[in-house]
Length: 298
Length: 319
Image (cartoon, rainbow over all chains, first blue to last red; front, side, top):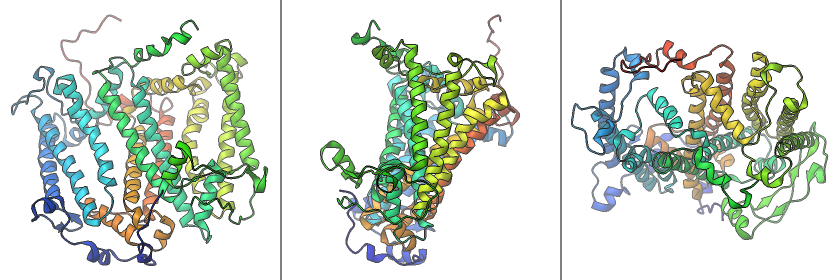
C-alpha cells in the first residue's frame, strides 16, 4: 500500500521553494468550511494576519478569553502572594466532594474551576474543529485534527468522564502550574503506586518510544539533507537496514509516528479512568498473576 | 519500494571491519508480503527486512550485550532455583542488585553485587560499541552521523545513572538494579528520596521535552500523513524543492497557530527536543543527592511553591 501520490504533485516542486506570499496567493480562498457547507453562507470565513478565523476560531477565542479570565482572576490576581509566585503556585481547586455532580453557584468554592474547565473544553473542541476546517480548505487528510482529538480525549477523560464515573466534580484535575504537579504526584500514590499501573506503563512506553522515533527520524533527515551523496535516499534505507535491520520508509515513518503517539495517549486515558473507578490498588491488582492455577504451587 | 531487487549503494572507506557475509552484512534480504506481518509491513510501505550489518563494532556490541543478557538472566534464574515455570512467574519481580552501600566503590563478592558490576560493565561496552557502529555506518554511506550524536544524548542519562553519579556519591548502591520491577522501584525511590522529582526543575524540563517530543512527533507525523498524497513524505526532495504537499503542510500550521516550520527545520526541532529530553534528565539526576537534597524545599526557596503550613486541626502522631 504505502503512499499513493496524486499525479502532477511532484511536478509542482520549485527549487529553493516559493515565498509565503506566492503560496498564500494560491491557497487563501474562501469556501469549503463546515458552516459554509451546512448553511451555504459563512461570514466568518476570513483570516487575521497569518491566522485563519472561521466560526470555530471565533468560538476558540471566546473560550480562551473567558476561561483565562476566570483562571487569572482566581489564582494570580487574587492569590495570597506576589504575582510571580502566584503564577507558579496559584491553585484552582475543583468543587468540594459534597457538591457531587451539581453546578456550583457563583462565589462558592469550585465555581472558578468549573467555569475555567467548561470554557477550556469549549476552546479545545473548537480548536479541533478549526483544524478540520483548515484541512478541508487545503484539501489534505484530517490526520492533524484526529491526532488533536486524541489529546482532547485525555482532557475529557480527566475532567469529564472520570469525575462523572466517580460521581463528583471533586475528582477533577487541579489547575495551576505547580499544583498540577502536586495533583499528579498525589494521584499516583493514592492508588498505591502508579508505577504498577499497566496502562500507565504502556502510556509511558508510548512517550519514550515517541521520543526515540522523533530522534531517529529527525537525525535521519538532517543527516541525509546535509549529505552530498546523490543516492542519499537509498543510502538512508541501507543505513537503517544495516544498523537496526529494517527501514520503514519515508511514508511509513510518519504513519507509525502518528499511531505510536496517539496510542500512548489512549492508554494513558485508560490508566486515569480506571483508577478509583474500577481499580483501587494497582499493587494488589496484580494478584491475579500469582493466582493462575497452572503455577499455583510454584 | 517492495521490489525483490536487492542492490547496495556504493560505500566510502570505513574504519570498520567487514566481518560477516557480503560486505560485512549478515544474510540476505527477507521479503515478507503474506500473512499478518506482511499486511502490517505493506501498510507502512516497506516489505524488506535486513540484511543486518555486523562489522567489528556490531560484533562487539552484540557479543557484550549478549554477555550482559546471559549474566542477568542466569543470576535471576538462580534466584528461583533454575525452575523455568517459577522463572516465568516471577520474571518481572526478579532483579540483579548492585552491591550494598557498605562496599562503597570497592570490589564485592560475586553474589553481593559482583555479578551486577560485571553485567553493567558489558552493558556499557555494548552501548559504546553501538555508538561507534552507528557512527561508522553513517559515514560509510555518506551520511552525517547525527543518529550517533542523538544516541549520545540518551547515553548521557545512562552514564549518570550507572557510572557518574554512583562514583560521585561513592557507592555503586546508588545505581539502578537490573530488573523490570526494580527499574520502576528505583525510579520511584530516587524521586521520593530527594523530596519528589516533580519539583526538580531539570526533571520538569526533561518531562517537557518528553511530552513535547510526543507532541512534535504527532504533529509532524499527522501533517505528513495528511499530505503524502501530494508527495510531502519525500522529504529529501521536498527540502531541496518544496512542492504543493509541503506548501499545504506549511499553510496548515501557519493558519492554525500563526507559525510554521519548513521541511528541513521541523527535523531540527525534532532532533533537539528529543536530544534535550535525555540530557536535561541527566542533569536533574546528577544534581540530586550531590548538590540538592530536597527538591520540594528547593521549590519553596525558589518561590515557585507555597510554603506548606499544616492546618491547625492536624495532630501529628507521636514519633
